[in-house]
Image (cartoon, rainbow, N blue to C red; front, side, top):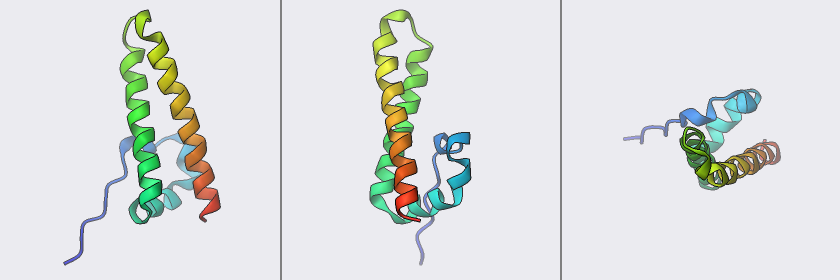
Amino acid sequence: MTQPMAAIPDELYNVKFAAYFDSMKELYILDEKFKVICDAYCISTAKTELYRDKSDKNHRRRMKFENLSRELEEEILFYIMRNR
């Protein structure tokens, strides 16, 4: 019996990754290191949104997660290019 394919997290369905979505789906399912990077990106973007809706006291936290999300976006795109 085959295992069901892992679903791609909703956070990865965005314009930044649109041109690479087929590669992303394949890497996400087959490459554990890539999956870990993507999952970290999804957590970071979710936390960015969480702190975006809060008061100014969370501004530093929001900025931290926004920066982390940008770094992870770059890492994801680099990983895809290197592994095509």
